[in-house]
Image 1 (cartoon, rainbow, N blue to C red):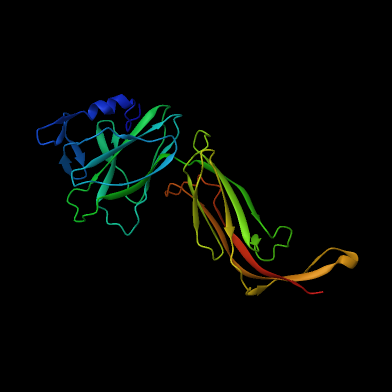
Image 2: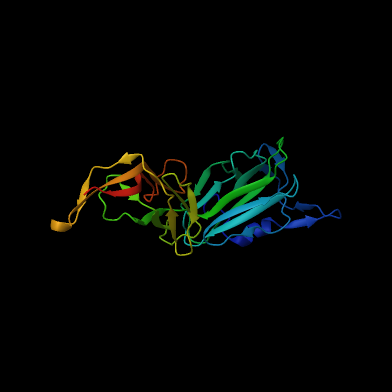
Length: 287
């Protein structure tokens, strides 16, 4: 059993056993635990929320300053597990996250990522959310992602409606649309549901998508009409009496596809793309 895990769900369920006094306050029969810099009794009003085998997005709100929420995830195949705090930067940090490491609760990063690795099949990871002690903010909202960690991605397809034209405008170029699909799996090769990917093409706003149960997601990005600030060199199509000369009017830009990584410099994600892109506005017949 790894030090940060409760190997069997029944173990931490027993730890969460509560005694309820006449006033309805739940007080555990276990020893006191550390929450941040303040020692508090671990309070459990209900069993942990058991999350499904995917990468889960969780958001919620603590009912009061004493409320504590518990979430557990089972690494069914011994896959890597990820925790990511996804609270907007504009939110004041009113809550903290911790994970169970043996008999001790350890801090999880705020606005960061923690990867649980070296797991064995059936290992459980237990985390909790609680109001930060001595916090001056009244916010008790939380938002995080927890479950199987993305491990490898393949950009299956980037196709546009400018196939066959010379690449004068960029490594990728399109007139009115770009089709993109991607496949992501976990560290055991299992297709990963709920993995996040995003793509930004030219002036179009970034679009985020999440993989389905088969680990895949596809997206069509529609491009607006344009006039074109750049003119390509002339090029020909056809031959003999059917030969024609053209040029392209286009706007230069970039195509950026990003995947959910661990923010620590570990590049698991070969599906990431940052490349030149040409938005072709018009194809002009010269002669």
